[in-house]
Image 1 (cartoon, rainbow, N blue to C red):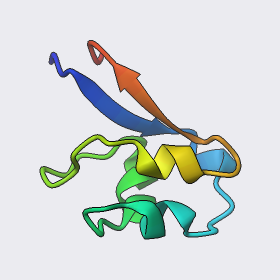
Image 2: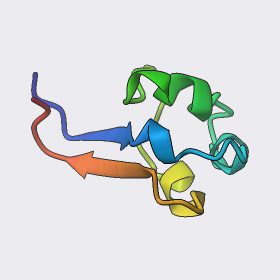
Image 3: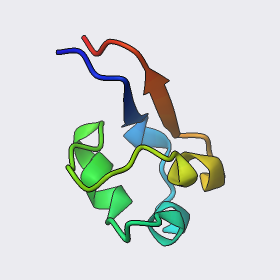
Length: 67
């Protein structure tokens, strides 16, 4: 499946601070959505605001093809 961008996470490093949830301009429950390793919500605009505020760097915006 080709996609221009996707948000992925290393869930094991998450400390549950909630900063990603608060930073989301779409008010999505980012922590819950990333439980599966990637945000799969049609309302996510792939802005990476959640990744920018993550203090542990567990979120990242991937560009290009998903495998």
